[in-house]
Image (cartoon, rainbow, N blue to C red; front, side, top):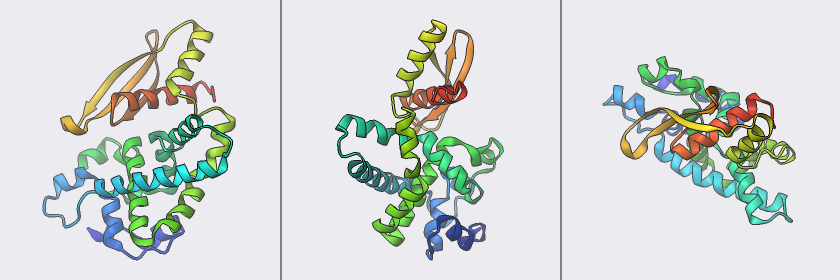
Length: 233
């Protein structure tokens, strides 16, 4: 199974000369794959995701602190939330082609797991965690600035950092006189680690969908999806 990770190709994508094949196999191993391969020697990517999340929070905070010296803490927090949310990270994973490296169960594969937002977003963090373990913080900083933070200016200029639910509610009330309603469409996973799929409706019309590890995150993702569809930002 190890041959499924082409380390040379991955190095070209990351623009980093990676050496630790086992580490990056782990970074792309989804929990579902282990359920089908109980004897598989590598763990899932969840611990690397945990580490990568912390690295990402630090590096994005550091970047914003220096880039916007006049901005208050509240604005910086909103900027950071906009750049590290599920939709944003998934978009970069998709652009980098992470989906093709994923080790997934047949069921996850059959239901579009390679393009599923929350899986791709988690994989972005897991790969960053692997980069941190192998190469350290300076390489991670260069990577995050190049592959994620490049779009910060656009987010600020387009006001895309504002709370997505509030922004979409203001828009829909002003344009249609309707308050958006959010409904859970689907949920899966164990009780302590559920993933939610939420739809946002204007009247009876479904105008956006989003996924997240909590209902609140899924609602924000659905609002962002709706905003993107109406080209509000």
